Image (cartoon, rainbow, N blue to C red; front, side, top):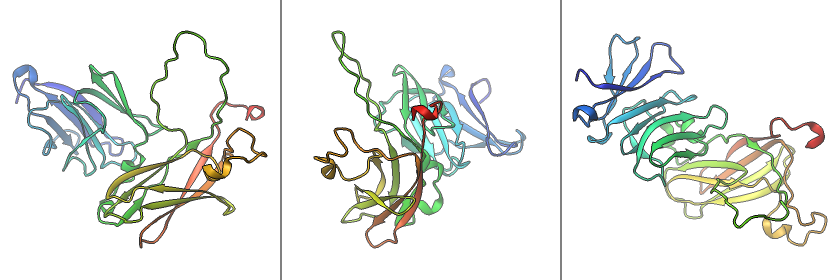
Length: 276
């Protein structure tokens, strides 16, 4: 309808002829979501709102930086995602309250999804790499092991005493490397992920759920199993963290063929060699 408010414009990162817009009509008592796309420099437009709630005005749309089929839509009642260029949408953001989403950004280096809400401040989903590598085969294959995002080497240091009445610590995601996989069906014995260095030396074996769907297993970048690190005098009281470099991760799930991925662990930027 004429006279409604254009709430966002998103030029495609992959095709100069493509752009997306959202239109907000709630000021005119029109609460339908409007998400549209042009693929011919604005000569024609197609509606991409099928599957979005009928009473949730659209505030923003964003396209994936790596995967052109990946779209995010922020509405008055939460965020939605599509992996097929808007043909279908699914509610997104586990743990996010039902809240108005006014803006969305994808961090170009960390691949984190950052959304701005009305009333609940910022909300971050750490590492959307699986969605960036999603293909139509991901749902049909028995198991998909997504390429992992590079990890940042870190070391745990004591901070000494604590001063003041209280210490405030916000809830942060686990440090280390994320291994993401999707199972097309349940796997009775769960999933194992074996980590090796570039020479093939076994460092760690991780375990994950075997239920159908998305799963994430975090490696804390420590070598050896936790039970083996207890009482090892040569390691002292400090965990043994792996050095920056390239590592191999092999996922095994049921009778499916093992899948291997590489993981790059890098130095923190800006740290001089003598400080590493």
